[in-house]
Length: 172
Image (cartoon, rainbow, N blue to C red; front, side, top):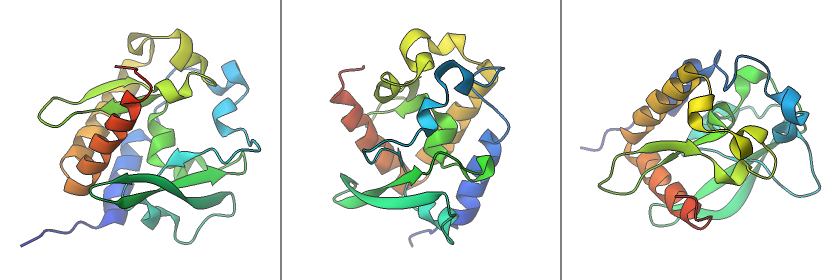
């Protein structure tokens, strides 16, 4: 018998784990003038984790959800969320909450939390710092949240595919 989870409750739990915690003890947006929240001509945003769309129904006025070519688990599509440069911090997607970190895991191996190489073009933390320079509480909260994701088959499969895509950046 296949067990289904309440996706909204799952993401509410993950969000609460990361609500009041940040990479630094100061607002890191001051280092880059909020580059990760800047609106550009390109469609840039953050991947939504599987089922995270449940957190955006109804869709807030600051957000748009887009289809992508990125798939996992035999062809399931991953959506991208973009913002207008503002958001309610309590409604940020999981990818924003863990940035500039990202989980990296291969089948049969232990998950690692690493700096997200995709952020190196915009984020001084991803460029100049090591994980050990970030708030230990933040790193621990991200690790715990991603371990929870690994317990759910669909999010685990997504993390495997995400890690495979990170290999394209030759970061590991």
